[in-house]
Picture (cartoon, rainbow, N blue to C red):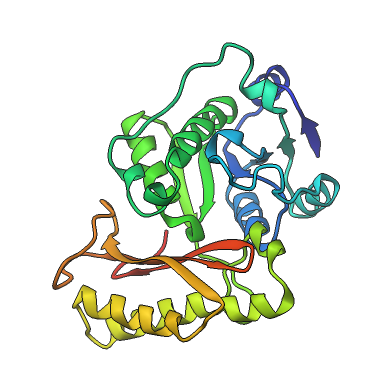
Length: 282
């Protein structure tokens, strides 16, 4: 497995590749969710590139950039075991050198849900992913469903900017009690991990109600809110039933596929999770 740290080396190595290339962008501190993406990329492509970069431009003031968990040696061992061919681990100065001033802004999708809570976050996400796509030129790029708004936004970006690639969204990988795997779960105590499973219980209740025929969006929100309210460790930031493509909140009867999503703080961790209603993940 090749470890690359500069833009020059990444360009050089990419030019030497023939056949399909799968790319798995990450911020490191990998868990089974990331590794499942790498395994799928390995199964579907001739070459697999993973990237590890804690992107400062997607962190806002007071967020956890300095404290974000990191363990590069462990990450590299996991990626090698998953069959990754190259890992790109650039420095911040390599991707944002002095004088850098080019950013990617989407007009509408970043203003909702996570974007409303974290202004500027998706500007940083869209910019770094665009840069990584340009550097790695993937045939397929792999992302997890847990970051559903990110996935929806990146699908819009790939269409609008005419990227010649397939964006593959893979199902969320969960801990035994339902908590979506996340690098930020490292902030939770053992008890908080158990209590944080309430996010998935709330979402599962909405999915089950939907399968039974419930189509009133407000009823689904109320059901999720009641389950979250019963767990004092969880402090919700939003509870949403939104259009799966526009992310507009649905009012009244659901007539389109929807994203049921929640964000909540548990202890020191800010957690997000979601389920898709009326459409398969993919």
